[in-house]
Image (tube, rainbow, N blue to C red):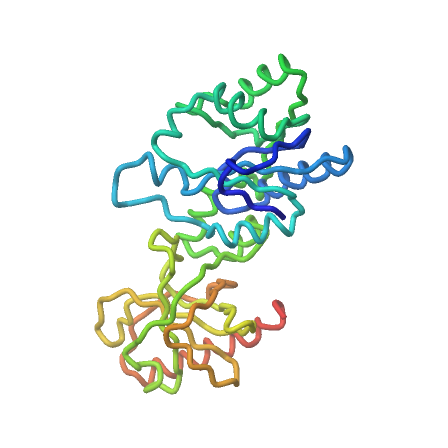
Length: 312
């Protein structure tokens, strides 16, 4: 897959099948669109193209410190897009000046001269251009005038709900990571850095890696205990994660700490790892003593080990 971040030295395509979108976390609805692009491109012997944006438009247009939390890093999105089979991804740097470009100008000045699409496929709720004027209706009229085919992909539903990034965020915020993973079509997680902790886990005979997400706008799960998978120095390993304030020890800082089940001895301090949330085990709670907490941790670990077979 070819990833383009500047169009300056790009050799324009003679024809293509193309889609446009922010693709805020690749979910099953996005899979449907991208797979359609790949299939139609393959049937016509043309390259499949995705036009997307970075950073997320809302991170640029909304002037506040409470940015929209991201579901998925650009790196991870590109890995999934590559697996689906898209040939070319053009990542447009999204700026305030770019946000003022009309849908008409965007198509005439960027899309058609460089990608010459024969077929454009978008989701039912996709909009682009200044003031989001470029919806499916606008695109259909525009392409009909220019003898270009248009496909509008209907929503994909789960349990009576249309799958969307907004709904998946809500599921993760509420702790329903299994359902969120189903709707994503992959496992929710993020890249993180291992930082120095208090050593509390080691004292309890459950040594942990304390982690913080690499992206400051990363969407975090609901507090609690989770069964997780980590990607560490090229290896997959399972573990259990506590995300919370450690109320048994009357602490207040929100901390994410992971006890990995691997036998290997890794020096993880300062390393970057990937953490994926497979299932939520329980709420975080205050125990009357460290001994009671250790007893519960052993129960939690056994539950996680029993779940491990589902994911190996």
